[in-house]
Image (cartoon, rainbow, N blue to C red; front, side, top):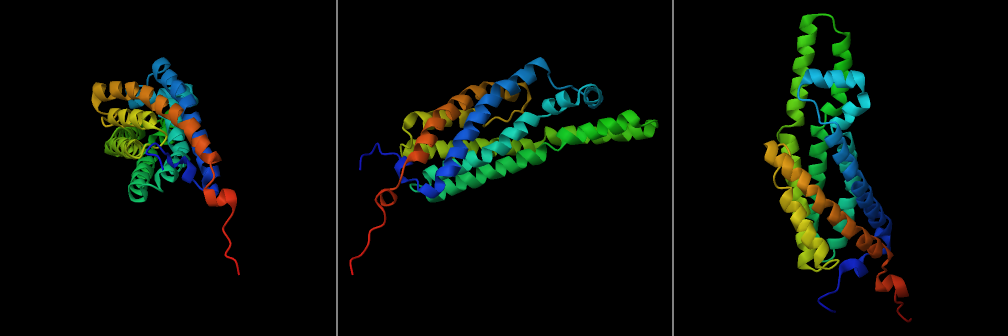
Amino acid sequence: MSAEMTTTALIGAQWRGLVRLGAAAAVFVVVMIPLQAAVFILSPPPGTVEDFFALFQENPLLGLLDLDLLLTLDYLVLIPFYLALYVVVRRVAPAWGLLALVIGMFSLVLFVVSREATFSMWMLSDQYAAATSPTDKAALLAAGTTLLTLYNGGTFGTSYILGAVSTLMFSALMVRYRIFGRLPGGIGLLTGLTMLVPANAGPVGLTIALVSLIPTAAWLILLCPHLLRAARETLPEERHGPETTPT
């Protein structure tokens, strides 16, 4: 076999649906990236708990969007995408592929956990608006402060870095085994490198996070047709049928 061979021809029929779903997930995330950027630019998140409470009372949907509702949806949609990447690399690097998958899934779980504030701030804002006692208002403000601290805290940062590690591992395997050619893997390595600085690491982290959207979108766009092509491939034994032993 040629050194340029990819693993697309080694994906069995039982994985086709999952790989197609992974390609669809990539398209979905690419479409969502400019929407998320537009929300951030047109409506920057408020700087204080009181401002968040006021925003939720005025426009609950905008409050949810400012607290990463779309990004949370993206992370959930990435589940079949990570699984599709694992299917692609599993035949040439099963152990490393499994490790990359586990790290990626753990990153998704931590991110969703860190977004507790997304809906909880809405509920707290309703309670704050209805509260009449200064003591109750102070307690609700303290609860909101805690939520925002967790929102921007270590769980989110850890999730971000683990996502970078998973992306780097999958991309390194693609480059190492020339899966889909070198370009998708190379862009994936660039994407992973830009994700090593968490978005909550001050202005520098936020700037790098915005810049990382460009290689991320390019990576997903490059992978999508390859994943769809992989889903159309058939193993030789499936194409010709199982061999039978004469009796």
